[in-house]
Length: 146
Image 1: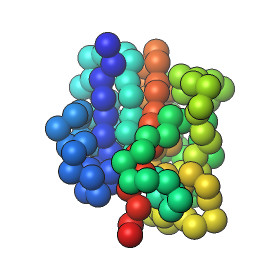
Image 2: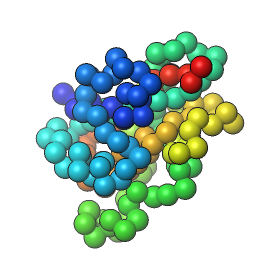
Image 3: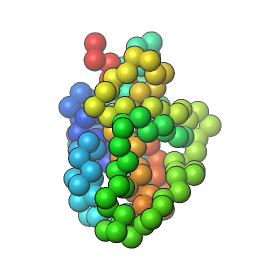
Image 4: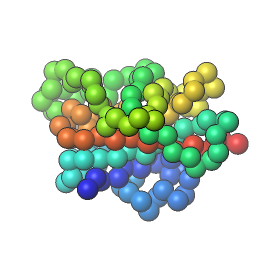
C-alpha cells in the first residue's frame, strides 16, 4: 500500500483531492521534509497539477520522469541533515507504459511552452529519493486555469 501525497497547489484548484491524502506544500522544502519524516509507508504516490489545454479537466497523467526547471535544487544546504552528498535520480519514478515527462516550473507554473507542465512535483520526489523511499509514483491532474 502507498501513502498518497497531494500538493496544496493541486488541492487549491481541485477540491476533490483534499480528502484523498496528506496535503503537502511542495513549494516549501522545509515543509516537504517535515511531512515526509512523518510518512510511515516507504511507497508514495505524489499528485500535482498540470495545465494541458487540449485535454479534459480531471484527466490524470502518470509521470515517468521530470525536468527540474524550478531554478533550485531542494537538496542544496540540506545534504548534511539528509546524510547525502549526491542523490542519483535515475529511475526515480515507477514506470508505466503511458508515463509522461513533466517540466517542473515552480513559481512559473503554468508554462505555455511545455506539453506537460507541473508546479513543484520535483521537490517532493527528489527529497523522497534522498530519504530512501523505496517506491515513488507520481501523477499529474489536469486542472486548467480556464
